[in-house]
Image 1 (tube, rainbow, N blue to C red):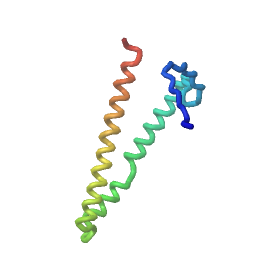
Image 2 (image 1 turned 30 degrees about the vertical axis):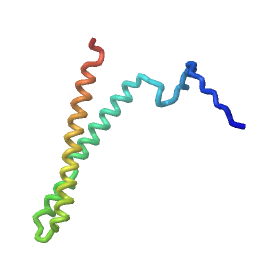
Image 3 (image 1 turned 180 degrees about the horizontal axis):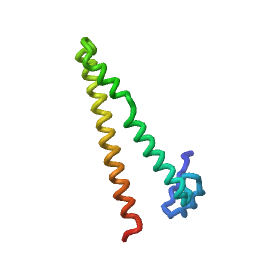
Length: 104
């Protein structure tokens, strides 16, 4: 005997999703301010690291790198530069968007 399957095309009412920490909205402006200040501190700390100074000391050393290694290091520098440009654009977009909040 063949199993029969019935497919209903009637709309099924959707049950409301239970509130979770991800969907619950709180109006914690002090927390947001702390987050922005922490972000500022993280960006400042990143800019003040000595790692690039150390890299600049390594580059002129004789025999420091093969052509393949140079290609890898240049690609890494390019990637970091791209990330910085994206961060700058994201920061600009965040500010522009925030400035539009409440305007109609």
